[in-house]
Length: 349
Ligand code: AMP
Ligand code: MG
Image (tube, rainbow, N blue to C red; front, side, top):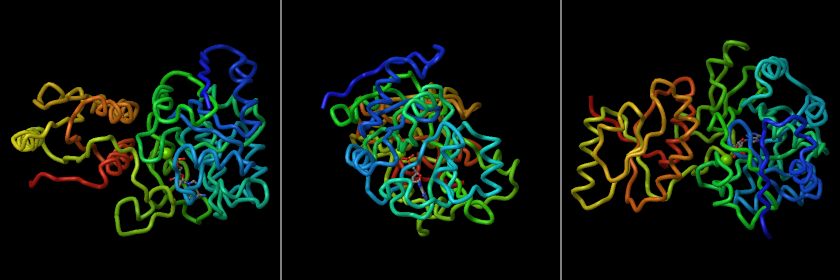
């Protein structure tokens, strides 16, 4: 199949009537799959009510079928149609953070969605994206849209239309090119079906922001221990991996430079993922800055693009600096740990 490239400038008014949005919405109603920008990463959308459409997502991504999809909505009426009830904590979070990068788990109403979309779980994960193109597309299609990240499973998530094209050209009906996404890491996933809500995946909305409005929340134990089984099926899979092996180094830049030289003495070509503050310090085969340590939202925004950029070079190993496990740094480290297959080395203090 030829993948249509549909460019949309998201500053124009009345996006719902933009010919490319109309065309993409029509494809969705015909159970085709279409990639579109959100404020986090590019999503690969399908009609969440259709088995046929949802199966196309799993197939195009090469995604394991036990890893459920997030449903994207443009209004609260769509939520009410799919859930048994809206727990109080969920209502507060929706009022405060939607549209935005927060996915909420609700008890699912039976018989509305394709069972494949939730991998037969009794819950359903829903979010309202804060992006004019995503919202216009969902409104125009008049459907709940199942949308995982628009990359091949295991690869870094796409933050540009060209990333989607590299991974999925020929496998999907269309890509809406709306420029670069903003947040850069996926939404936070929170289970509001428990008495005390549980964060299943760190992301664009931080634990600190959530606790400021609903009080104590728990964190799925599996996020910080490899022994626990994660409550969110997707969290157990390797993700986001660049072509060369990645190792996260938690220590001083002097120590990291020594590690680089050790590997180079063995004849390996080494890349380093660093930040503006440290980029001139390192002597490696490839040095890429991912943003400013002073403002970690800049690192989140460029993380996946940087991981993909390393694939342009013939290198044997990538080292990455570590980041503080707080605020948006928690999501950054979660993605880096997974991209590294949990290989982290700490400097002896
Ligand atoms: P992605 O679509 O690639 O952003 O990943 C979606 C994440 O949400 C995965 O980690 C899924 O396992 C998780 N998820 C989606 N629906 C559910 C659900 N009903 N229960 C638990 N986790 C879910
Ligand atoms: Mg994904």
